[in-house]
Length: 177
Length: 459
Image 1 (cartoon, chains in turn blue, cyan):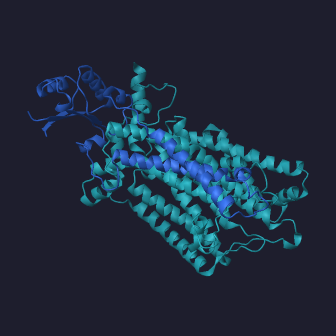
Image 2 (cartoon, each protein chain N blue to C red; image 1 turned 90 degrees about the vertical axis):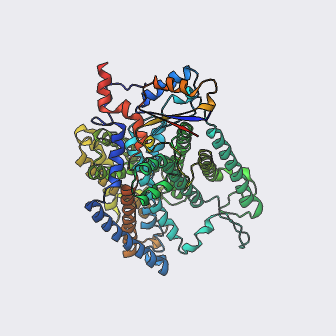
Image 3 (tube, rainbow over the protein chains, first blue to last red; image 1 turned 120 degrees about the horizontal axis):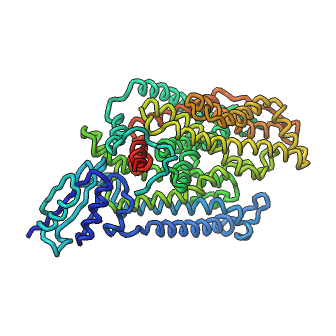
């Protein structure tokens, strides 16, 4: 039996939510949802885990802090100490208050850009990438739920179709792949 | 579903559907360019070209082409720099701080405010960069391995902190803005029929598909970026103020500077946002999304920050006398009664008195009055920087070295030129980019849309 993919379209986020709840309660696994905007509360229903990007950002920012501390010590204390207005050029810790702004800015720089790059790479959104939404209307006002048969081994395609039709569907397209 | 108290006024007027929002924002991009836009762009571009001409002349001649002299070594250039950076503070404040405070009204204005921020910071950077004189050596501000000894930049210096602060602020604001733009570019891409335009927006949208996981990441990234951009907003103008406060010039050497500059920056930034938005909502027919309520909220921010600025002026004045330092006292007496007293009184009128008019509900909900006052505030804030910079250094410790500053044609040309470049960029943005965060607006439609709120009240 060929695998089938169901693209179930809804015309309202509330209808989508209700349908997702109903289908998941009946044991269907929803592969993905394409929506024009974030539908709040949908993720736990369809089993999308919380992203770890915030943790990544913290690690990038900490890297930035360490690099900036090392840099200020190396440039100002170790490699070429200079007497500037009598500021302590022999000890990093005594000169540290003057380095706070740069350390802070560099931490933010690394935290923000590191996270943004990770976000682009993990999403697969990079310049020139092709879009993969099944219908152009999903970036306007329609919501599409993607269900595939091979993730729902216990049910036949006809059974899945039956359950889907029980929800407030706007359009349904079934494709074999 | 989330319900908003019925006492809160709706943020989106009339009956709109998700599709209407897309149509209202993307429609103007698809249609032919309006005549008014072409005229405005031509005027802005001519002024911009004149500014670029002045900059080229400055680079070819040296910064002696400015009206600076031995006494007044910083004048219009740094005034313009601080003015533009200050204006550049509203965008990230609106998108970051108001996001953390869950202010829904920010969604109608954050996109254009951020665009304004980015363009304003670009204009700000023009002045210190060209003030270096040999602009092709601007990269010397970076700690790169070199053959001079090895001579590193001085990380004790507030000017060096500024390099880091402004570049971090600019690049983080840019990324924040662009991450928000990607889903909206995807909306435009999926609507476009002309293949060239479709290709253009397809590249800009980075292949965004709006999967559930993408949106989870999107929201997390927005929140974390807002969290780290918030201290960034405050740090940037604090550091700009330290360019002055860490010196020993009477009138500059005060600890009040960082909070005073930050509130001044937010004050001028909101004024510029209002100036731009009031024109934009009219010409692009966005009255349903940006209406009196939004303007009133921004005017309230202007009263608060304007009053903080007013208190700071008076505190400064009082402390100059109370400190018992005669140089400090003289700097302030000279400000309000010396040769530049006209600029001091101009600043006081525009920044302290005029925003107080917004206490009257009639005035702060009147769009024409708001438009006029927003321009008045922008003028006042330019004079504030001029007063701080020029009046403090034109008469310092040694009377023999006293002097005055007269702007040259290149000074004026560069300032006016940056306004031209700024408006050219903003007009291009308004024509080709989604001017409202349309997909984010859809998330608040059912909560804060007028017809939906009325419907909810019936139940």
